[in-house]
Length: 215
Image (cartoon, rainbow, N blue to C red; front, side, top):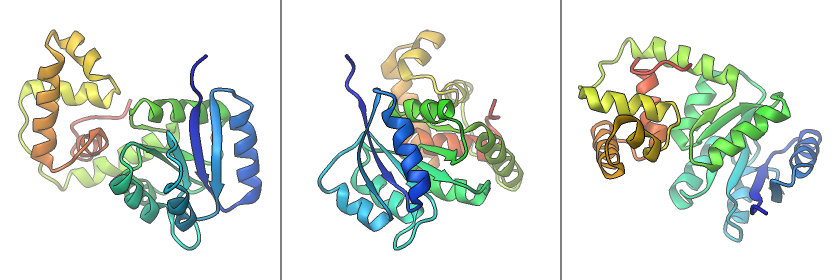
């Protein structure tokens, strides 16, 4: 039997929290190991437990989701943060992604979409719910027209597109008939060019500059 994915939830609305916990725990794939009402308590909990996933509300009292996410990304980079919100606001999406969130979903998403976002985040693949994807792409594309992207080689652009499609380095290597080490090298070079540290930053850059269109 597979080890369950462990989850900590930061959410201040009891009604939504209760429903979320119930939905997750009905599926033996997931285990909620803690829940807190604000970002400050979330950071305290993470001093004692290390979950696979943190589901964090963007708008919370005491310490909001953006600020909490920044701290988690710096202190606990192995933890995947998925942001949750009731508002379809592209500024919120961008702030959470810049803070290090690997996923973003609307609170009224159905359970299948919730599971999909969690599974992708668990595998280290950036993922956003369907409506957020479209709004994020539109916002980045509009602002990207004002920005001049750096120069990338044809091979770098190929790898960038495949990484944006959530392919692993192993899958990219197979598809492009190259070694995983070579894919790693290209990825590192691209991150150095744009001043980012992970796949989330690369995808954000690609969308913002019109180098990739969300499908």
